[in-house]
Amino acid sequence: MTVPGSGWPGDPVAPGVPVPVAARGAAGVARLAARASLPELDARVSVCRACPRLVDWREQVAREKRAAYAGEDYWGRPVPGFGDPHARVLVMGLAPAAHGANRTGRVFTGDRSGDWLFASLHRVGLASRPTSTHAGDGLELRSTRVVAAVRCAPPDNKPTTEERDTCAPWVERELRLLLPTLRVVVCLGGFGWDAALRSLERAGVAVPRPRPRFGHGAEVVLGELTLLGCYHPSQQNTFTGRLTEPMLDAVLGRAAGLADLGSL
Image (cartoon, rainbow, N blue to C red; front, side):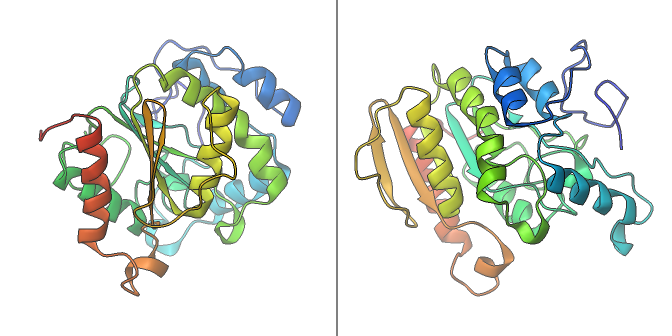
């Protein structure tokens, strides 16, 4: 495991940003997220220790490792957002995968879900390459940013309600910083959909009541912003055919079109 500025390949923490104080509870997350710039936010996210169960799990995974990655160093910390700081498209997932982003240090990188997501982003013109293998692989996103609603890998990929709420100020602050340029939010799964609606509402965006329901292809206009629903590209969905490549491309292509983004 590493700390910001340690020379980790593709370190998501911007050079020159001081090593921040770690948040150690919900109040600490709220205090440290408030008024942070995006580089400061990424740095503060990356050292957060607010949820004991998640800290224990992510670090246990990083120590014990999966046999296939036994020779690799694991990131083993919370995972900041990745992509354009002036994004017009935001893709929101659930949480880092234990042996994906918790290993590589970059959201959706190094796991099957990320393989599907970045390949599709490339096909619709929002990513410079179709693969995302490690944080220093040169991948760039075009006017797009990818985040997770919960920033630490949870056991069984299931954060608790308390963990979700403790982590929420990180997402809310990130959305506030992106809102001046943001035009589309793509929500991967119902968890991402609910997190996006809650965070947008707290960031000052008018959300209708009752809140719109999630569905694949669901589309909700919130002023100048459009919310799109998409099944999560988890193996549970892709292996069963519930989500196909054309279905994923259709949603991400719609996002690119709504954001007035052409091909790379």
